[in-house]
Image 1 (tube, rainbow over the protein chains, first blue to last red):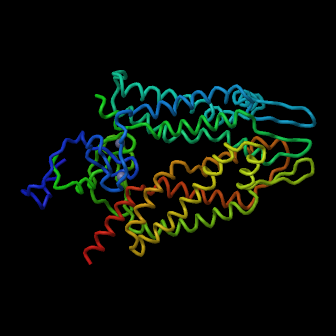
Image 2: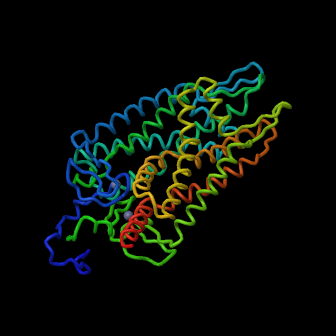
Length: 213
Length: 214
Ligand SMILES: [Zn+2]
Ligand SMILES: [Zn+2]
């Protein structure tokens, strides 16, 4: 990393000497910035970067706890209500997966299981681990691994919305007087849970991984 | 590490995936640069990026409109014909009292995807005619806030899952909008995943510098 070689202004007094560790990306526009502490604002887009250093993880914790709490009723209440010819059948998220499996729809059962159970739980665990590990000296693994974990939650996180969309499509399509599919209470709880998990991930300050050595 | 000024930081890029600082080098037209640590694509160079992106954004918007006007999926259940469109799916949630879920879905699968394409069309038009220094900046900032919340691709996969679930109920017909939505999703994924916002910021900077020189 030698910028000086091609530097036409060599010898001028304006040369800045900085530590590579002091460089952070803007969360909005990705521009590389020099970390100036609490008064950071991006040199390219002007957004306020990580202004809330004094309560850096609290916001993310608050969103995450909301998401985890909402995930409980999401699993206890019915997600889908099928009423056909007077008989009403309710199924929870897990119940729906089991039913699909028994009916032989293995690929769909796997997709719903991954999207509604695996991804949310994995995201909770990863975020809890990251939030704790930036405050306390746990997790001896490389910092790069933590960044990769965070990247993973960002990429797969939105896919947990699949079941909500599927329920919405089914309910919109099938609503006859004799056969009707309705969304259940769990749909609202689950949507809240996904929304707040996404917020928690966005609120997580990735530069904290770097600072915690 | 020494820098002549803060602007020289534009020659560096931090990998999204592993957070490694990489130096940017000019690369061949049509090729892409990868992270020295993890191999994740950092940036690409395509001399026709603005023209292509503008054409794709316009095509995408047309497909999006088509995807919303006609039925996505039609179905015969007990002799009666049922169909869905994206707006119908959202309104059906609102009608049955699921205001929160309905509102969330409205933003995730309708408002945000639509916004992204309208913003892209304005943005790439401004970059083509080399105007609107302030507006392009605001649009780029807005774009980076909206992009993570656009879920048209996930909605499309959800339709496929719903179709598989419904096979037992009756005859299913794929509507015109289904294909339009598929085309839209392909363009949407291409634009939001393969054209990195940092590349557009750099293009904007280049255009502004050229403008100053003249
Ligand atoms: Zn910025
Ligand atoms: Zn990397």
